[in-house]
Image 1 (cartoon, rainbow, N blue to C red):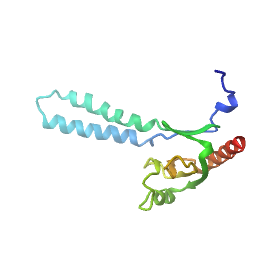
Image 2 (tube, rainbow, N blue to C red):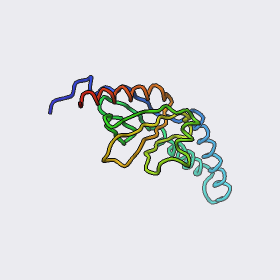
Image 3 (tube, one colour):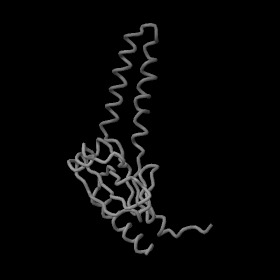
Image 4 (cartoon, rainbow, N blue to C red):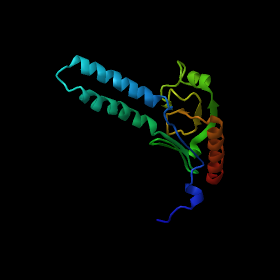
Amino acid sequence: MTPESPARTVAAHQERLRLPWWAWPAALLAGAILATELMLGVPEVPVWLPYAVVVPLGLLVLLPLNRLLVEVTPDEFRVDDARLPVEFISAVVALDAAGKREALGVGSHPLAFVVQRAWIGPAVQVLLDDPADPTPFWVVSTRRPVELATTLLEVSRRARVERA
C-alpha cells in the first residue's frame, strides 16, 4: 500500500468542541454538594470518603463531552466516529442559534444525523445526495459555521470534479 500524499491527508478544517470553562467549576460544586449530602446522610462513612469519591467522579463525567472532533479532509467529513464522503454533499447551510433550533425542531426529519452540543449555538446543516442512504441531512454544532460550510462546499466541489 502506498502512502497518500500529505495534500490528501491534511485536514482542511479541524475543530474540537470543548466544554465552556464554567462547566468545570460547576461540576466541582455539584460534586461537593452531593458529597456533603452523602456525608450528612450516612454518618457511619468517614467524612472524607464522599469527597474523595464523588468530586472526582463529577469531573470524570465531563471528559467524554470534551472530546468531540469535527474535521474536514479532502476525502471525508468526520464528526467524532461518523464519516461522510464529501462527494455526497450537495449543499451546506451555516445556521445561527435560531436556525439550529428550527432545523432540529418539530419539522425536522426523523432520519437526520444530529450531533449537537447545547452550549454551542451555531451549527451547519449538510444536505446529502446519496440515493443509497436514507439520511437526508446532517446537523452538526460548530463554533465557526461559515468557515466550516465554506470548506465543506469547496472540498465537495473538488471531489465531484475529480470524480467526473
